Amino acid sequence: MKKIAGLSLAIILISVSLSVDAQRWKLRRYEISLGLAATNFYSDVGKSVSDQNLLNSFSTIQLVTTRPSISAGFRYKLAGDMAARFNLAYGFLHGMDGGNLESREYVMTTTIFEPSLLFEYYLLSEGRSFSSAALFNHRGMINNYSKLYLYLFGGAGGGIYNAKAKEGIDIDPRFEPGAGFIPVFPVGAGMKFSIDSKWSFGFEFGRRFTISDKLDGITTKTSKSNDIYDFAVFKAIYKVRTDRRGRPIFSTGYRRK
Image 1 (cartoon, rainbow, N blue to C red):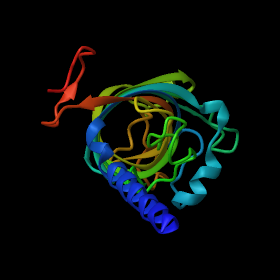
Image 2: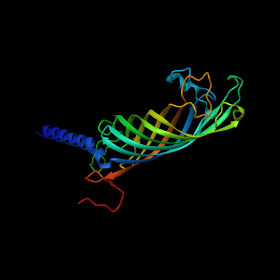
Image 3: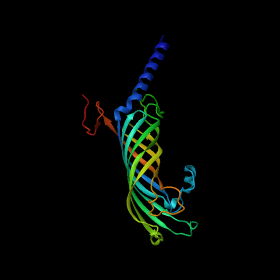
Image 4: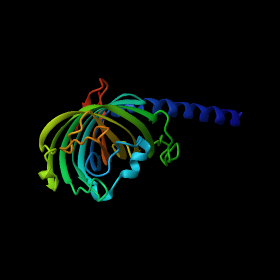
């Protein structure tokens, strides 16, 4: 009888813990993130992705043209495995020819400010993720932190850019420096590691497809594709508490009634 009672109690506790875990995303439905990133640019200046598929394009990444950027985001969880995110990014795009491109020696840089709205789908979410901690902590309470979350994302936004010549390219009549606006379409994947109920750290890689060939300020007759750029972001994420009506709680003195 004692074995049956013990087994029944274990089943009940596990069922309760799974139920709590599946709904826990509602307790912290909002997230604020800040990130540091690296950008890579594929255009008519330097190596491009014009004649390559998406997988082979990663072989054209040049560390010498990698540049820094920053980002910030506000995420709202729609469900345990879905979220919407408003994202802001500001970065530098850099292109530099080698000696094998029409004997050119073009060097250019573009600054870009990118607001976007993204949809995230979690392959490994709060209701499905694995925990590296024991089910119960030393106080006998459910302990389900230290989780890994994996997700895919896609969306649309805009890029406000300003292209400038550095060397050589400014004397080419095809180069048109200046500012402009283009639609951008981010797609990518990310991961988050939750260290406690408030903080997570994450990494995200996103490719930005555009409908423009002017981010570098130049268009050539041999160009067969629009400009593309990548963001690789390391970020810190703060999870904001949510009240019973689904509103964010920013006051530390809040008490549930």
